[in-house]
Image 1 (cartoon, rainbow, N blue to C red):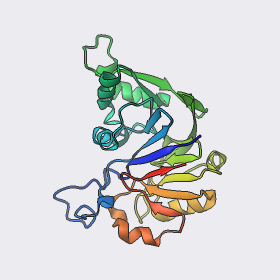
Image 2: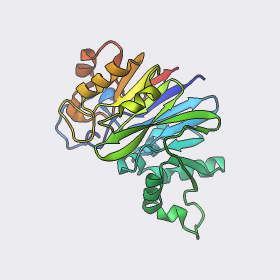
Image 3: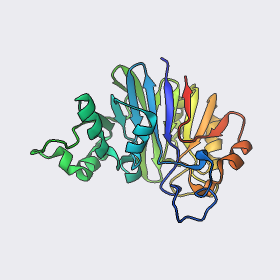
Length: 255
């Protein structure tokens, strides 16, 4: 299985460039410091999957040139990972297809509340047309593409990471149970949450992310969900182990 992976967003709401923000990262002219909310596009053949649809989803789809989606995987219910779901209506209209969303039961409940108008019995034309597919920790397929859910914890909130082929994606986590390690081991590329240098209640900091990477030993790892508190890309990246880099928006790699 060959994959093409695009980092659509490598940041977090605590790190979105703000005009009035005086910090070095927000004022940086380096495009790698301009981080939209965390999301990733996985392509295999004619199948396009997106993991998470945050508030920047529309812009990310335009920037990546994505014209169709076969599936949207949702890691958890927080707004910075779901708020852009309304914009699937563009794909509904262009491709004359429903949007297939894959999420846990608790996340589906949240989506039905947040986007209640999209699931009402009396819908008017133009509303998002979404099919919600309930998943759990069992492997499943999207258009023949196998997906392995990985259970991680975002403080007290259960979150799903995903393995697709030799690619693993873990965002919004500060704990990966050891019984999930076997799902990750052997992957060629791991993208993992690494918010900042200081400890955080619900995210890995950089040193914790590096410890996990050293334990799991992927060929290559990228740090994502980066806040401006981590610092400038060009200052932090050279300090990382040889097989680890900071992710950045627009990064593309193939497996």
